[in-house]
Amino acid sequence: MGRRLLALWGLLFAVMTAEAVPTAVCQRAEGAIVVDGRLEEATWRKAAPLSPLRDLSGGAAAYSADIRMAYDDEFLYIGAVLPAKTLRASQTKRDSIIYHDDDFEVFIDPTGTGRNYLELEINALGTVWDLFLTAPYRAGAACVALHDWDIKGLRSAVTLQGTLNAGEGDDTSWTVELAWPWASITGHSELPRKGRPPAPGTEIRMNFSRVDHPSGAPFGTPGYAEVNSVWAPTRQATIHAPEHWGRVRLSERPVGSPETFPPTVGLWVHGGDKALSEKAVRAWAEAGVTTLIIDGSPEQIARAARWGKACGLRTVAWFWSLNRPGDAEALRHPEWYAMSAEGKRCHAEAERPFVAYYQFLCPSHPEVVAHLKAKLAEVARLPEVDAVQLDYIRLPDVVLPKALWKTYGLDMSRTLPPYDFCYCPRCRAAYGAAPKAEDPAWAEFRLKQVAAVADALADTARAMGKPCGAAVFPTPRLAAGMVRQDWGRFRLDFAFPMDYASFYEEKEDWILGRVAEARETVDARFPIYPGLHLPDFTPEALRAFLPRLLEASPEGFCLFSHDTFSPAHQAALESALGQKAGGEATAK
Image (cartoon, rainbow, N blue to C red; front, top):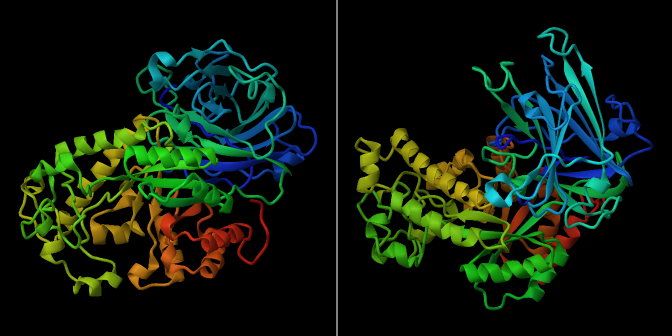
């Protein structure tokens, strides 16, 4: 059970959020629903399906599902059609281990705290396993899984489009219909007992999964294998990571009404700014900012994050990774630093490329990785922080954005040895051949080394219950050539591409093109929130461009940075979020 992921999620236009999870709006059912496993009511026809299932890592899933949701004052309704060439089931006793059969699973965290959450599994016989967990399994003794807990008043039904346990033949799918009483969702554990839904606008965390066994071999026998297809990938070998589950917002609108989940609006914040205040954070929240991405010391990050939490914002710790300016521990180890093709390291100030704060570490050095994991853990463990963003998860610029060529008097249309890293003895030895600047294999070696560090850091954050993403160059293709950062291969939970058009001597349409390219490259394995450079936009230009950006990136976007986010920009943001492209009003 600890290895499976299922995403049960709401209604209508599922998109991704700042915490890198699917989202959905769950709307009110139209009329009565008879739970018979047939999904014939008008509600099911009008309800839009969730976004496609993925595998646990975020890649394409082996199996699909059409999952829809609605609710009324008594129940949360879930309907799922599960395509299957072979219908199989053997478990007939309630609370048996249902995932030993092909099954459908639903997870609900009513408070979004990762504690006291609910799980339901059902097979093609309609046999149910429902349980209550006090914490994820990784919590050890703090996790108590109550297998004898029952969803009082649960209504469930299954229909088969084929013949059960007859092997391949006329089987096409099976259908699950559930009516889960609100009394068992909003009234358990420390929650006051009540049998009504949360207020409209409330968000709860959920996930769905289907588990399939392609070989048909029974559990514990040779050839037994599970395939997990889930709604909200956790990027780890378990579905029991509630911090990665999707977000469902309840709506008072009837099912089928045009409505989208509000977009994520991130703002990069310099936590050490002495002018930063809770009043400023509140003004940003009122303008439509949903997420703060905060750099600085752990104390500075925690302070700004507390202000954000007080305003209902999500908070992301901004972590400088391979570039570590002023890192006292690293500076005691010159051998940790990246080396150019000319043999100069980023350790000594006189040998650093471009600027004094370019103090890049070598991605191949195991002590570097261990050091970075320890430093990341310092911010990931902050209770005020919801997620972690890696910055400078790359090598120095082998090619600067074109607008900067004149600044440094360089023509970087070809590789220049002073700016080509990492040629340190450790990397040369690991590569096993004489590196040649234009050799694709040598470039690939460094891309892999950087990706390995990104994955190690992301795994460290996830092990501490925090999703992890990265601020990256505009597309994996551009990033690979410019800074040895093919972020399309990173195991991220989200990405903030820095689409700073002026750096590339480009305009707004260039941003939209890069967003489309990046989205196609990662193929929905993780969500992308393009970053805008605020000095490039007058308030009026920002107001006009954001609806176009949201058409290209409905999940949301980020703004760099708080010190240029003027009151006029804030007013422009608030205005733009109230408009779709073309001026049609939309829900906020």
